[in-house]
Image (cartoon, rainbow, N blue to C red):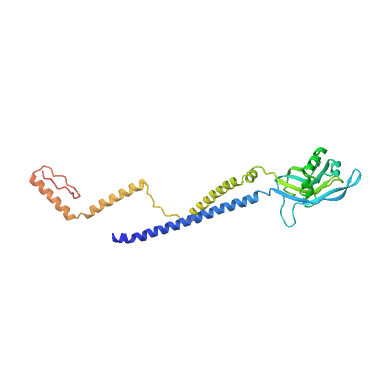
Length: 320
């Protein structure tokens, strides 16, 4: 009793130490699996979801091109989609929408030219034109009365330069442009087929049109992250559990004998017991017992001798 009381603090201390070590191990394992799941989802998202938008400034210049009147000076520009030293191609197989934004003054020249045509050529690295498109544009119409009231309303801002008399014309050049797998586009060639147009600035914008799984991942990032990280956590935990069971040596299990083997063992034990009892009986004792039985027979006057046992019996003999 005293020894048990003395050993009680050591037992409690060992149990607490074992509990702390197990808790620490589980916490470390949970942290490693969680961060591994987050890292796997981040790598997948980074490689699977391409950049959603590309914006390129367009520097226009005049260049002579053949036209019905002979040679005309058109506004042209070559936009480099892939910058030197960077592998920033458009995602191959991804669908894109391509726009051209033209910032134009509401001048008399632009009002007179009316509609104009814009040509866009997607060019590969070896100079081959992969795809080409033509789109037309025009300034939005404003009547003289609207211009008068608009000017009167914006006179203070127009005087101080915070507002300008200009319009932004946005042209959708490609609605479903798909990047080629074998030959990606590296340049975009722009031509504005009008020699009298006036443009402040021009900007080429490329937007990714996501569909399917990319659409879900891009438009619902939080929900997608929770589902993706949870799925990774399940599979990483499953792999860790299977690896632990495979690497940990299994404890030997006691062999279970079948019913037939148990029956044979019992019969063998019974036979051995009988043999031991037979071997333990000495011959003089057996002869003395037989002699007593014969004497009892002579005294009783029985006609037939009583049956006798070959082996000693534990029950006493009953005289007739």
